[in-house]
Image 1 (cartoon, rainbow, N blue to C red):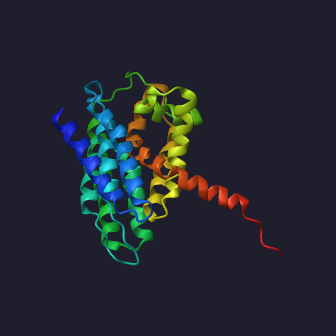
Image 2: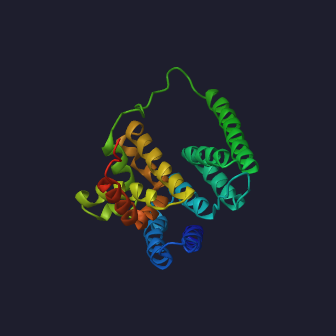
Image 3: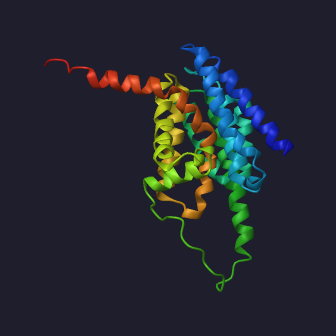
Length: 255
């Protein structure tokens, strides 16, 4: 419980500081965004979920993202704290690997070479450890062992929405509100006109696509990997919707 409280407070404090750096409508974004983060991160205080690796890894991903300060053009931002939190998440649950790969690709795109090298090295160390683990496990496997059901079950949109709703405090809402809220949270990241907004959208949409393809119905708790981070996108959703409406009203230029 002490560790869960410490992680939740760290997530809330990191996002309070991160959203306080938003130049546009700072007060509203900081207050509402931090409140949404608290609603999301508070699920980590449910002692019945403590055995779930995804609960801890997802919280560490949310902390990592809040600590990340990208720069660009070859300049290094503040990323070391984000790196440590992500490494802990990956050590707890291998489902954190897509986040690490996304951060590596983001660093390469920004030409932050030291940061990119760190993320790539972390990936290689993880893959080496996983290979070693599989080698040990292979010694214990015999032909008579029973096979579990497959994870590639193609659940479609339901897989994405159910995973996030059932592994977050959205589960208290009726389905006709909870499902659209997940879509709105993911889309809302595009309203944050910054590189971090794009990364937030790709993170939510990427995991959402993965949940559509992989995972059984009893693997709903995988959604906890992104639920704490996803909630932040809701604060930017009005801005994203306004941008969409403006684009829809724009007349095409004459030939």
